[in-house]
Length: 182
Image 1 (spheres, rainbow, N blue to C red):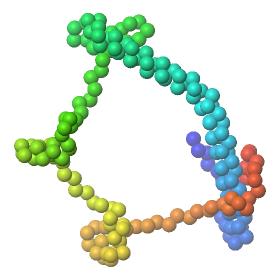
Image 2 (cartoon, rainbow, N blue to C red):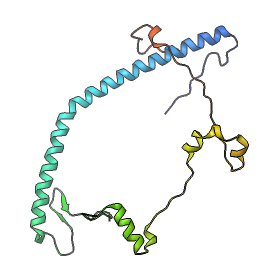
Image 3 (cartoon, rainbow, N blue to C red):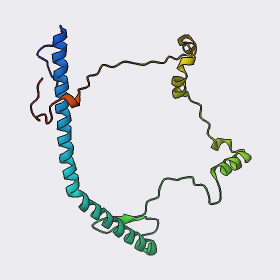
Image 4 (cartoon, rainbow, N blue to C red):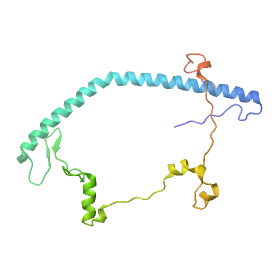
């Protein structure tokens, strides 16, 4: 949950106050970067600590699951009629039916399939999509007046956002973490 910060001075009245406020923002941004770097380093240490064990466990799980699947595939009489799972105490094993998928047969290409479907007049299986190409409109915006775009219900909008970008090379190295100025 984000907490609300109240500033000592809620408005800027002079250029000197602007410079001072921008300097504080730049310092805050550098402190924020240092905190994020420190957090990332700690997270990387935690990942490194557990990564090898997790990888080993994952490979063991995968290999043993394949062994069990092979056994169950060969011993289908383990499963009662019309039942695809079996409770073994510590875990339930079984077969799940996946989501139906349409696959192209060997020696067929997608274009050949499309032609064959059209040849059978199975048009309900052919999709055609019309949509506005916004990227093309933006690329061609210089060729069309605002009035021309308005006539088709469009406008190209480009907002400006204010930013403050600290000059990293001009700041002292090693900003102290925990020394926040508000």
